Every structure is written in structure tokens, then in C-alpha cells.
Length: 537
Image 1 (cartoon, rainbow, N blue to C red):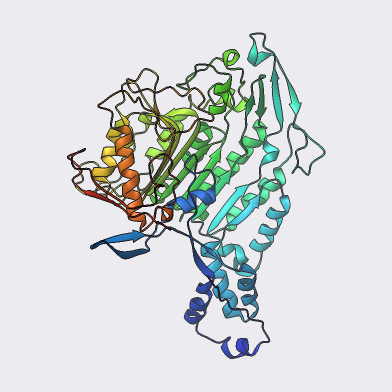
Image 2: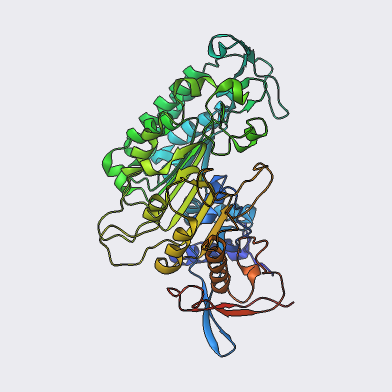
């Protein structure tokens, strides 16, 4: 593939002849720098970054009509959008003020303004921009990100196993890491200047549409050590973020991504938004990053023997101590704060909940607005659920006769209660009532140990399967219906399984030939031919 791009200097003959072009023509020329790149493989185990979440939720409207063995079918192409050759694009600013204006407008749509909490110079530069004439470049900002907050995770609790876990410990300051630029380690760093500058930035911003916040994660080791946060520092940052979310700068917010230490912090930031602001939200991503303490991570099962339901809460048995944040605001104890925030956002198109300690999806009372087709994109990680609570997120509004709008589903480590139904009921719902489904990436779906279909995974930190389900039950259609969904998705992706951005193993998709089967006998409610064109090259 060849790319042709435009490079202009202020003294070139071309720039002299064209600097007075109408803005519409300049916009059209600069739009050539916006490329649709083929979407790479989606990691089934986690939509673990803001960029990956953006790729996952980006709609694919590029359809091509294909013809195969006498039958027409639609081929969906999956793309992510980005800028090509930014250096040349920035050179276009030098052509004229009009070109500079058009380029800034393009960057406003495509780029994030990144503020690094541990680097006060990013705040100083932002304030300098604020003080420029007419608000300066910052008045153009539509996407704002706050990250690099490692100075908020400052020490470790080292506990004694003397049965007084939470009262017998020493604090060890964080030591230098490979990327650390610090040599003066403290329990608390004075960030009053940075926070004051951040409030000034919030005061100057005019119309933020996308906002992302990333706190550092915290982990435990099996010797009763736990990474801990500067509680004063975290509280100060949360208060400043609440100040910003209440300001007029966020009155146009439609996309919010929060990676926070605990469910309590998610609720605190949610409370800062007015109901009008929540009603405007289209995309919401809530990620919990503190995984300290018993059952906080699948990795802990190496020493938490028998904790296959993820409900162990005894520190000595686990060997994994909690952080100071989890002692004060345990994720399970304060999960209602998170669920209430989600429930108050009824116009969502995309929702992601990524937990560390398992959260209870049944506590979420979310209903889309009347007449709505519901969510388009959903991602869940480490939640306990019932079939009814999952299907509610995959359906149109209550009483609606319209099909669900769901297009992309990512489920990772979702566990169904022993009396919560079966996975094939979820898969059947997707096949029968979700005609727009494009991507279905799942891994480590399972049941509680008391469920009739429970299948044991003795090493869940390294043994992976799309769904863990009992083989011997002749009425078990979990794998069969999941297989049907995967085939249907490949068919929609076009002439080859390689067009589908989800890697599938163990489903017979590597046989190098086209497979056409009729599943109406196997499942009467799905009277359709599943057409699977597979590349033979």
C-alpha cells in the first residue's frame, strides 16, 4: 500500500498559490492525513487500555457486498482511525493562518491533550496556553487525559503473620524502579502547585467531550506485602477532579474513562456529575486498579488453594494483605457506589466494568431510556452474574419490540451463580435477538463450584478456555451455541476468518476450506445456514 502525503513550506510555490484556498478545500486536503487502519487482534482477556477500548468501541460502517457460490453476503471491515505522518501534518501550520486554523481543528478531533501528574511542567505549559489570546490552543481541546500518578503509590505495608494483621506492620518507602526519576522517596509528596494549576486549566477549558483519568495500580505479594497509596494525595486529587467535573468545561462530556483505586472512588467521581451530565454520557469505562488483598487477582489462586469462586476473604489463608485503600474502602463493600453511578447513566451506548475483586452484576439496576435499543458495546471483567443480569445489558429497553443494538461484546472471567442459569441461555439470546452483533470475544467464562455445569480449572492463571463447562451433560449446549456465534461472526467478517479480529482456537477454523452447515436441526429456533468462507491461501 502506498501513501501520498502533502508537504508544504511557507515559501513554496504551491503554498503561495494555494494559501488563500477556501477553508472547506483546506479541510478536505488535510483529511487525507486521517487514515483507517485495519483493526488488529482484539485481546480477549482484557480491554486493558484507553486506546484498546477506543478501538473496541469504534463502529465499523465499511461494508462491502460479496458474492460466493451464488449467494450475496455483506462483508464487514474492522478499522481504527488515526493520523498518518503527523510531522508533515504539523508542517502545514506554516502555510498560512487559515491552514493553521484548519489543522488545529483536525487535531482537536483526533488527538488527546495529556497532562502528567508527576510532571508539573505539563501543567505549567497548559496554563501558559490558557493565558494566550482568546484562550489560546487550550480552547480547542476536546479530549483531556490525566495520568502518570506514580507519586500517589508511595510505600508498602509489610505485615507480620501474628494474627493482628492490620495492626502489626511497618511501612517501607517505594524504591527506585527502572523508569523512576526520583531519588528522594517520601510517604507524601506536596502536589499543591500541580493541583492549583490543574484547577486553573479546568477553569479555562470550554467544551471537553472526552475525559480519561488513570491512577496507578496496587498489588499484593504472597508474603503479606501490599503496595499502598498516599491517602492524603489521593483525596486531594479526587477533590480536584470533582471540582473539574462540576465545572462548565465538562458540560459537553460524552465519553468518560476512570481507572481508580476502588469502587468508592468511582462513586465519588460519579456523584460530582449532575444528572444532566450523566444523561449526556454515551461511553462509560470504569476500571478498578487496586487488586490487593484476598481474591484480588486470579494470580493469587496459586497460593489461595481452593478459592475457585473468588470469595476468600481471610488474609492469613490468602497470604495477600490489603492496601490502605482496601482497608478503608474495600471494593466489595463499596460496590453499590459504582453500580449506582452506572444506573444513573441511562443513555449509554458503551459500558465497560473491569474489576479486581469480583463484583456482583445483579446489583446493577440499569435500564436504557424508553424506546432505546440499549447498549452497542459492553465489556465485563471479573464479575459474578446471573443470566438475567447479563441479558438485561444485551437487550433493548423494557417493553420495546425493537431488536437490541448490541454490536460488540467482551466478557472475561465472568462467573455465573450456582442458581443463576446457564451460559447457553446467554448465547441463545445473542443469536436470536442481537442481529447487529459484530464482535464476540470471551475468555474464562465459568460457573460457581456448586453449579451443575461447573468444570474444574486447576490452574486458572495459565489454563485458558472460552468457557469452562461440564462435558458429560448431554443437555449442555454451551460450547455448541458459542461455536455458532463464532461462525456467524466470521461469516460477517467476509471471505476469510483472518478478517475477524478475534483469535479463535480449538473450533476447527484452521482447516483451510469453506464450511457450510445447517444448524436448524441442532437448534430449531435458529433456522439458518451458517456460511463460513475460509481462505485457502
